[in-house]
Amino acid sequence: MAASLPAGLNSSAQPSPPPRSSSSMHAPPPPSSLATLRPSQENIKKEVEDEIRNLHSEVTVAKAAAALVMVATLPSAEAYLLPAVTQLSSLLEDAGSIHVRRNACAALTAIMNASLHHYIAVAESPHLMERLLQCLENQDGDKGLQINVVAAITVLAQCGEGLQVIKATEADVKLLCLLECTDDAKLEEEITDALCALAVHQEMRSHLVMKGAVSRLAAKLRTDSSEICVRVLLGLGMLCGSSQEAQEQLAETDRAIGTLLHLMKSSDLDIRGIAHDLFAALCSNKQVKPKIEHLLRSDRATKDI
Image 1 (cartoon, rainbow, N blue to C red):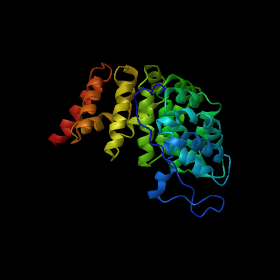
Image 2: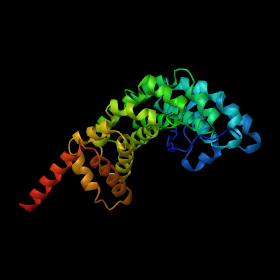
Image 3: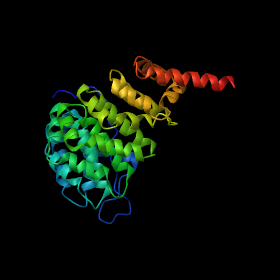
Image 4: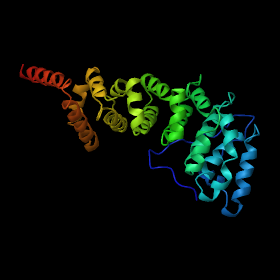
């Protein structure tokens, strides 16, 4: 079996069944019957090949892509998945169906997760990132498609081959712009996951800081979602932990220091701990410390009035 991908953030890309009202596609199976899409072990090769052929049919394409999402989780299917990559990538350009694009994206993500060999094959497939970014900016504004695209980028961010195409296409900048303008909690979670996956790599941190990641992440600290807050804090911790420039950007972000002080009192232990570490990093910066001291004095003076 091929080597596994390095440990990282899990992708949550999900297949989307075609709409029941579509006249050009089969109605989707009810949720209880999704298990029937799993091929039997003895017929795995035939089942995978059949689903790949079905990708070329307008009638069966969405269902076939959804089936491949599930098939790709079977170790015995690894040897037969690669022929699907080219067609799945081309389906990302299918302007006629959001469901096809959702499922194709989820299938590519599942194939990348099968092994390092599969990851490289998908990451190096021609025009992949350009097509993913087209889906990210889809005119329909479909959140499900955007979430699946961001989940794919999160997986791509785990190794060097994916980092290269992310930087070359400025996909990280697109993610930051989308984070700034969206108020969808699930999409925010996915984007912050992807940014954390990028920030894991030392060589990406200064790049993200230069592109404005600190202020855009900091703006999400005031979220009501503890899941998003933890992700934002983790991302800021990686960017600001050893970068004075990033620390100064964070200190200059409106209400960021005050929000950190508030989060240090959170009942959520993860939030409280990460916020404390991030605040300590800011206090170690000689340029930032006077601003913090001024804020603390102002806060005490307000309480004394």
